[in-house]
Image (cartoon, rainbow, N blue to C red; front, side, top):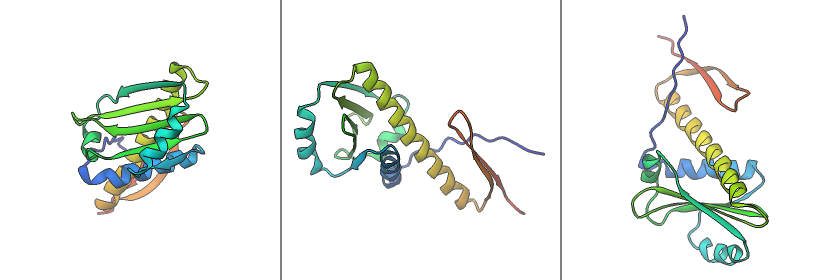
Length: 158
């Protein structure tokens, strides 16, 4: 007998370090640099001045994600031609800003969504792994599917 369970982890306020860790992992996997230091804002402002296009949007259905960020928290992922920033708004939502050279607004939005999706997948994966460990379950099998999703099979011996 088998069952398929889809887990959607809630993002708790204490999860900010895990979110930053996930974002850092994705940035380095993509060959980008990563920073979550507030003092980095001054250096970033200088680098961003020369960028041509910018897109911004509020991330939908992530009010819980906003809870992980305090008012001053933000992180930035940079490559040679784009800067991706995630920060908390005054209303508690996550705002994504993507700036870049020689890119259209559509290209920037697509690249930003790709980065955000990878961050959220890595973050969700780590949250699920923590919950598996917390409930004393054993991972039987883990596979990366063609569509980019990850299937984790767990078992609990009683």
